[in-house]
Length: 498
Image (cartoon, rainbow, N blue to C red):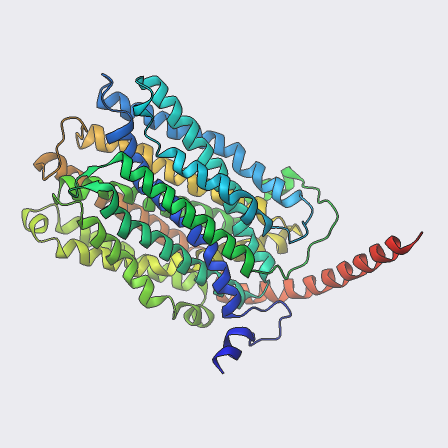
């Protein structure tokens, strides 16, 4: 009985999928988060506390150089990400599918670049300029390889199924995979790479990056082996009208809403890496980062099995807006209760607020990729163009842009507003520095969630509109499927001719 539920879809869509199919898909984002969470959380600390200090360069100059680096590399991503989207969209399907092969081809280069980011070149190069150049090259390589993996992986969902319920199932299981990958790094790495819970050990950090890279390769290979592309694509090389493809995106209200929301929330998640400084210099205990992570992920674990059913009943937009409202309210409380001596010595209130934020964010996190798929469907219905990789590339870039703004702006706040100095700011509670770090973390969190909440209130693809959209696309795709079968028969007939 259980086996039937896992293997037999419950609707009549020929491309419907089961839990078994979605389970295989989750391994891809598990691999993504093994490397991305480690880089996002610890690379900044590795740069500021290990790789760059100690060469007669002031903390302010290090901050300025890192800010420029993040901005320069995001400018490169403005070219690199859409370029990868075009490459993936225009390339003919390979023997094992249009998107799946990238899981195997890109996995090892991506994981090599991850470990390279954490190689402590100070043992070899005694030059600040040389170390900064190394940071540029290694982080740029990581960004390029991550894009080369993430765009095909994200686009793969559209090839696995075109069934709306299946898309929600894939988004849910992708969130499970990202939750497992992200939580595993956040909960385990903290203990492995810090000495006495306060000082980042560069040797241990590099070893951890190697271990996580190997785990990521295993996850990508599992995803490759356990997924299947059901939605058929023409074997003819596809032509892309750049002006039409990208020009229509920036006139699309659903796309702009999701893109800006993705930039804000992705930036906020990246900004969460400053919790490393908050726990070290406000609460005086870096191990508290583990409790913060657990309080954020715990609601997602509790809600993840219910959200697909809630989505089917109420709609993706409706659930995301409600969750963002809850996260905004919890963020406001976080601002109002601190900083204070009582909160610092008894951080239960801080943890509880993070639990509320995590509960609200869970809805958007679990449904994000279903919402992106809805926008891809909307664009196809409005323009007649099926360029999911190009759309996904722009969305991916917007998320990276949010991360860059979080890193660059956060570093400026950390150094220039809070007064952080890695050479003179010792681990433990520092009254002025710690309190300012608390203010910057809590206020940025509130602003990001509040703006995103307002944007989802005006997001036009509610449940009713989506049902109508999907009905129209189903009819259109049925006609296209017949044409593809005819094309296939003609090609086979032509191949048999002497």
